[in-house]
Length: 205
Ligand SMILES: N[C@@H](CCC(=O)N[C@@H](CS)C(=O)NCC(=O)O)C(=O)O
Image (cartoon, rainbow, N blue to C red; front, side):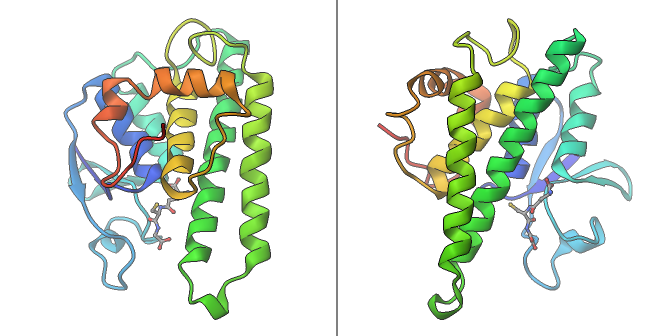
C-alpha cells in the first residue's frame, strides 16, 4: 500500500503515526495537492491529502476514513472495546479533528496577501482552539491515556492536533493547561510521533 501526503499535513500525519504504531507495510509518497495539475487529482477528485492506495487504481481519501481503514486492517483497532469508552474516544477524536481544522483555517488566512486577510476570521479560529483546549483540560481525568488504560485513537488524534498547534499556531497553552501538557509530553515522546515530526518543527520548552 502507498500513502500519498505531505510531511507537514496534520491530516496525513494522523495516518502516518497510525502506520508507525501498527508497523504496517505502507510506503509514504510525498505529493503536493495544491497545484492545478497535482497528481493527487487522479487519485482524489477533491485534491486533498491523505490518499491511501489500497490496490491498483483503488484509492481511499478523507483522513478519518483512511485512519478507520488502517486501524481495522490488523483486526486490533486502537479503540476501547466497551461502548462508553468507544464513544468517549470518538468524542476526543472529534475535538482533535476540530482543532486541526481551525489551525489550518487560521494558517491559510495568514498566507493570503495582507490586504485580503480577514483578522476576525483568524481571531474566530483562535477562539475555537482556545475553547477546545480549555475543555480538554477540564475533561481529561489525568490518567496515562485519555480513555481507559491503553493508547487509543483519542491519544493519537489529540496528540497530533496539539502538536499542530505548536507547529502552526505556536503559543503558550501549557502554563494554563498543566494536566494536558503533561499528558501531551508523554504521548508525543512515542517513537511514532518522533519519527513523523514535520520538517522544521521546533519542540516547545
Ligand atoms: N477533511 C480532509 C481534509 C484534508 C485536507 O484539507 N488536507 C490538506 C493538506 S493539510 C489539503 O490537501 N489541502 C489541499 C487543498 O485544500 O487544496 C481530511 O481529513 O482528509
